[in-house]
Image (cartoon, rainbow, N blue to C red):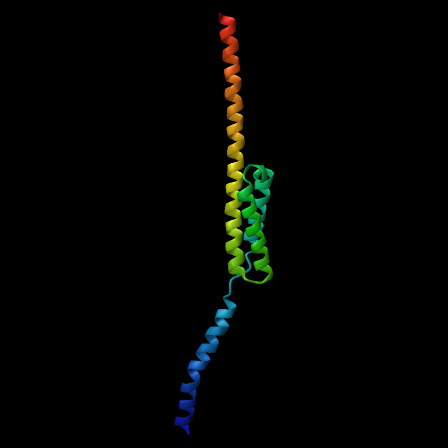
Length: 128
């Protein structure tokens, strides 16, 4: 009878190990990327405030679409996808913000150059 119990224990051990692995794996699931979603939402907002919608419309659209996909993935509890989409949205928003600031800086530099040109012309006229 002892051999039968030992045999039953040996044959049940792999099943027990498999069940334990499933339980432990279920507990170690990916946490909801709440913080990443908040950071990405803020990045999209900053980019919009910086003029991203006007100066970098394609990047802003991609950022908003990916943020929307991240929110949908959160609702579906697909946290890996939610994190990935939120990170991509953040990068797209940062690119839109950088492009917007670059365009504004370029315009300001052009205006400054034009002002310098006008002043030089005026100085040249006065010195003649």
